[in-house]
Every structure is written in structure tokens, then in C-alpha cells.
Amino acid sequence: MQLAELTDAEVAEARDARRDRRAFAVAQKLSNIGDARLTWIVGASLFVLYGWPLAVYGLPPFQDLPNHIATAHIAAHPGLYPEYIFNGFLKSNCLLTLWLAVLGGHSLAGAAWGFTAMTLAVNALALPIFVLRFAGRRHLPVAALFFWPLVHSFSLVMGFLNFTFAFGLSLILLVVLDRQRERPTTRGAAGIGALAIVVWYAHPFPIGIVGLLVALHAIARPTWRDRARAGVTLLLPLIPAAVLSLVTAEQHLVKPEHTTAAAATFRYQNPFELIVHLWMDVSGALTWRGSMTLVPALLLPYAAWRYGWKQRPLLSWRAMAVLTVAYLLLPNMLSNWNYLNSRLVPFLWAGMIIRLPSRISRNMAGALAISALAFSLSLGVDYAKLDGDRAEFTAGIQAVPERATLLPLLFKHRQAGEFTATLTHDWGFYTVQKDTSAPLVFAVDRSHPIIYRDFPPTQLIPPALDRFAERFATPSLTCRELGRDPSLTSCTAVWRDLWANFWRQAEPRFSHLLIWALPAQARELIPPRYHSVFAAGRLEIFARDTNTRTPPTSPIGE
Image 1 (cartoon, rainbow, N blue to C red):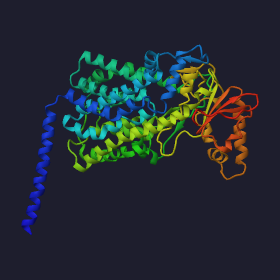
Image 2 (image 1 turned 180 degrees about the horizontal axis):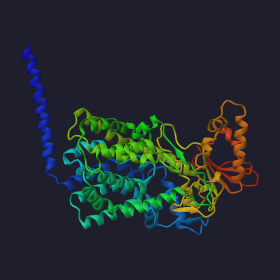
Image 3 (image 1 turned 30 degrees about the vertical axis):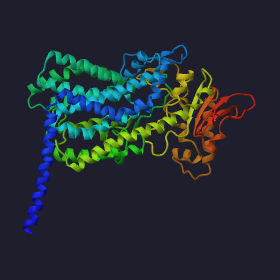
Image 4 (image 1 turned 135 degrees about the horizontal axis):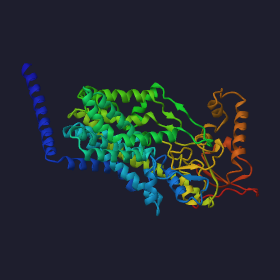
């Protein structure tokens, strides 16, 4: 019995020895690769793994992206859109607008595709650079198994391309700041100031987080002399970007005097939502097929907590605690600034990633690697499916005349199982191809690239118009939205009155309607002056006309 036990122990020991030898061989090969080359290898691998659908399907199905393309089209044709004022390029959250203005002359969609690919590449490279600096090369292979959701991330698929680009640059800025912390130079300070302004130009939120982390680092120094030194070497170069960020916040939070846009003020998440969104606000999954991003989301806190008690400069446990408290206390929406606290989540992930061990169990590594590969495959399936939905949505472009005043009414913004409402802004393709009106364009704040010269009625611009049709599609939904019992017989009368008031505002202003997923019950509410001129699948185009109604046409082949 003892011999058998000893034999089993020897077998296990031999197995562990072989595994250690293989791990040592891999580590030895990695040690022969320079940091720069290793960064390019990891970054290029991540870019190919999650960027290949861009090469196959072209413009990605990201939620807000068509709205940004329509914005660039409107800004480039002020004569066609005199109702808007262009706010200029010298403002934050404007990098994509500048890119489209400079490179989108031939094709705005092509330029948007290029910016998306560049943003993906920046994040794929920034993450290994960040880990190499704050954790070391021995930790990079394990970290790469966890940080891949940050490459094709939630902010990317939402179409928050400026923020996504700024997040990647902010990680690089933290690396430069840490080098300045060790060996401060005048040239380094100038570089920090310049890079911080670039980050601000892309989006103000990441530069605000960087400034907070640096301030916490300076405060935590043991003596006043050390605090003053940290303030001069690290905080001082960030002051120009900090001032610009305050100006941006003022432009967004203080509304124009003549605005009619309804302010959404505050919206907080409940405790369950706060927990779930620690996963969802990083995951770049488009549908449930990409939900394997949940694997690193569950394993990352466990591994970081169990093995990662080492302090990291600029991202100490104190700083992580402050970011966590801010995430819990900040609203999800502040004065139409949506997903506010969600933008902290990628930084929380980054702070945990640099606390990972240099080795994890084979089972954990296998689960993470399989999840990473499966997610790459799921993106291809989802891009194909959502590309088909976009083709169905835009099939009515030829039925809409040039310069039509087009009102999009989407009774469904997403299908079951979809994590993003990818069709929400696909009306933008009608604007670009037919110069139609754009009542859902981002133009209600001074922080946007364009703003209304004279604001339309509240019901006909965001945020009131965004989901009006979906929220009030039926009598029962209407009562539920208004906080009433959906079973009341009075719901139908309330519903009809609400829509009648809406059409009194909309009918004189819009010559055409773009309607998606129209419920049978809601069809009778469409004013009789509109008649259907195109119908295919879930899409229907209506034209305002006093002539006799004509039957809807279908595309060739239907």
C-alpha cells in the first residue's frame, strides 16, 4: 500500500516536473524576445483575433457609429442643413469628427471603418505596453488571457469610438507618467502635457481618471516634500488638459438658453445592475453568442484578490478603492451624459489585470484561452447576422426622395438576445445617401460637433424622440411607462391621446416616415395623409400625400 502511494506520488511529481520544464522552456523563449517585439507580437495577435470581421464585413454594426457618420455629413454640407450650427473642431470628443472631415471626402463609411480599425489597434497595443510596465514581462502571458475583452470592448460596439481610443491612449499616458515618476525630465513633462491634450481631444473622461490617479499618488507620498515633488513632476503637466476637461464638462452640463431638449438629469443603477455591469460594460459581445466574456469577468477578481496584493505605482489599492466607490456612487446618466459610471469599469479591470500572478492553473488557462478563441468566432457570426439586419433596414433608401424630411420611428431597437441596439441610428445611412433630415442626430448639447440653430419641439428631438415609438407602442406599454395599471380600459384612450399630440407636432414637419417593426395595433394611428410607398420585412416607408393611396411596392426579388 505504501509502495503504491509512493508510486502515485512519484508519478505526480514527474508530471509536475515535465510541466515545469515546458513552462521554463516557454519562459526562456520569451526572455529572448525584446519588450518591443513582444508587445508587437501580443498586440498583432489580439488585433487579428478580434479585427478579422472588419476585413470581411466592412463597416461594423456598432450602435452610435451611423449617427457620427451622419453628423460628419451634415457638418460637411452646411448649405443643405442650415438648421444646424457647426461647433468647430477645437473641442473634446471630436477626434472622430476631424478624422471623417479630413479622410471622408470620398467615403464617410470607409473613413469610419479606418478609424474603427485604428482604435482596435491602439487598444491591442496599449494593453501589453501597460502590463509590461506595471506588472512585468513574466506576467504578460497570463494577463493577455484576461485582458482580451478590453480590445473588442463594450464601448467599441456601442460606437463610443472617441472614448475607446482615449482609453487606450490613457493607458500609454500612465506608462509615460510612471517613467516620469522614476526619472523626471523637462522633455518628459512636455511629452506628458502633449499626450494628455490628445487624450482630452479624443474624450475628456479618461484624462479625468488619469488626473485622479496621479493626484491620489501625490497625496499618498510620505512627506510634504515628496508630495510637492510629485505635484510638480506629474500633476503640473496635466493642468492644461484638466482645464480643458472642465470647459468640456461646462459645455455639456450647462444647456443653451434656447434649448427645448428634455434633460434626463439623473439615473442610478440598482445593486444588481452595478454587479452585472462590471461584466457588461467591458464585454464587447454583440449578442448572447459572445457571452463567454463572462469567463474572464468571473475569474479576474478571484485571481487578482488571491494573488495580487502587491502595490502598483499610480494604481495602488487605495486608488482602486476610490475608483470602486466612484463607480458605486456616480449615476449611470447625468444630464444626457449616458453610461457615466460605466466608463470607470475598464480602468477597474486594468487595475486588477496588473495584479495577476505570473502563473495560473492549467484548467484556468485553458478555459480562458478557449473563451478567447470562441469569442473571436462569435464575432464573425454576429457581424454577419447584424449586417443582414442593417441591409434590411436600409433597403428602402431608393424609395425616399432627395432632401426628404424623414422621421425614423423604431418600435423595436433590438432583437431578443442582442446586447446593443444596433439599428437605433441606421437612419443615418438615409441621411448620407439622400440628404434627408436627421431628427435623431446628436445636436442638443454644445459639446456635440453640431447644435440646432433653432430647437424643434421637445417631442421631435432626443432624448424624447429616441425611444418614443418603442416605449408607447401599445396601450399596455403606455400605461406601464406612465406608472399606471396596464389592465385599465382607460389605457387605450391615454395611448391615442398621446399619439394624437405627437402627430400634431410631427405631421406638418415630416414628408416621409421610416417605420421599423410597426405593430398592427399602432398602424391605425398613422395620419391618413401618409401612405405606404415601400414595405419589405420589418421596414415600411410612408410618404405624406393628399392623393389617393397607392399599394406599397416591394424591392425586386421580393
